[in-house]
Amino acid sequence: MNTPEFYISEIQKLRKEKNAVILAHYYQDEAIQDIADFVGDSLELARKAIETEADIIVFAGVSFMAETAKILNPNKKVVLPDLSAGCSLADNCVAEDFAKFKERYPDHKVVTYINTSAEIKAMSDYVCTSSNAVKVINSIPADQKILFAPDKNLGAYLNKQTGRNMVLWDGSCIVHEAFSLEKLIELHLEYPEAKIVAHPESEDPILRVAHSIGSTSQMMNYIVNSPSDTFIVATEVGILHQLKKKIPNKTLIPAPSHEDNTCACSECAFMKVNTIEKLYLCLRDELPEITIDETLRKKALLPIEKMLALS
Ligand code: 13P
Ligand code: SF4
Image 1: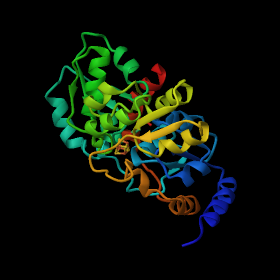
Image 2: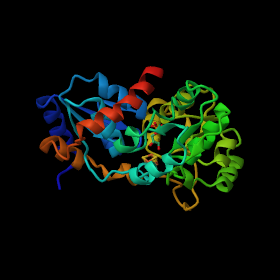
Image 3: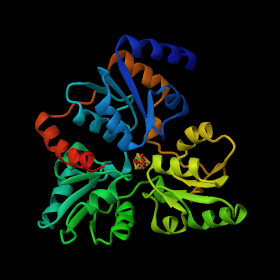
Image 4: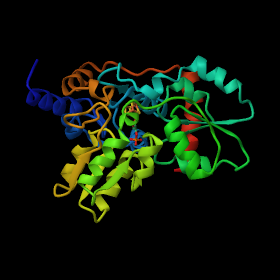
């Protein structure tokens, strides 16, 4: 094992030699965020993947994100530091089961959260992210029935926001459903001036007490632009890294989860399988590479394009 400095200087050399771009999600390790060309939420990362003129996209995130980049860029090489970087939402919505679920609702349109595999996207009418889901759903005629998958918490939140009664797939994010309302209320009593900011993958009781709800980028914008000085942040702790750089004088407190008695940190174990060493190795070896069958890719592209046209 080499030093972090070694990996950083090698990555700097290789990215130039190979004309590679490094895209990172806010939940990545600090060292990965610091070396990335762009850090963003899932919609912004998809957009960056389209705009880039790089030959290689190194996607520092989870596999559904890298797969989305490949769906949008069939002619570019897309690599991911660790192919095992899954997601509890995507992994628990398996194509075979989803096909049976869809069959039960033949007159419903299918809206899926971007946290799914290419197979599920290919079975969808629309894809959305947490930043544009309301817009996507509102673009569908009010009398059209909808199936929403795979996040039941986000789906329930969207039903409230849009007044729909979408049928929801029974999935959830293991990170966001771990926040404890009881501990959050206790924490807020300690910091009554704090604004509670939550990701919509959180459960309804957490969202009910939140002052602001949005995607990771929307949460960041709210915190940066708010006149308040103290925030309780209900999402993965990786988001605090960019926030601390942008607003070093504000107080940021991670929302407590059921399990935590010490640091109150909620980490996505899937996101954290990527390390700076694996980032270096995947850039050096151009592996592991994301590959998608072309017929599947074309089918999965259609609902993503609809989303991009709307947002
Ligand atoms: P964002 O689109 O808000 O970045 O969400 C991605 C995600 O996986 C949240 O858990
Ligand atoms: Fe998936 Fe949750 Fe991790 Fe986001 S935080 S990648 S939704 S498991």
